[in-house]
Image (cartoon, rainbow, N blue to C red):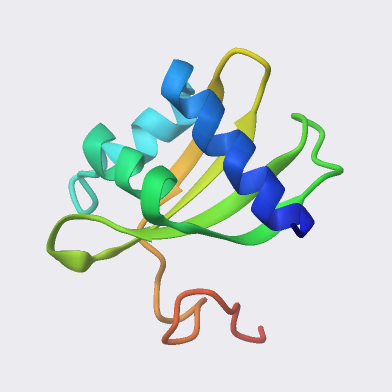
Length: 109
């Protein structure tokens, strides 16, 4: 199994124990134009995919995941797996200016 597949399994396993939503994530999720629910975050974790991996992140190994929420809208989350919980660092709706149509590929600046 490749590293991203192994990482995805660890993320899903620890998320079953506990998800900790950091204050920044909650602020981003509750912005009026986003209103991302915790249920949608769980959908991304369970059914989404890792699109960027950040093993050297200062907050600890983290990654960017893409999944679909209500009405199949794309949602990005940045999360970091710890031993006893999954830290949700941020969550947002990817914009078409920054992301290609697949919402997996960053557009060139």
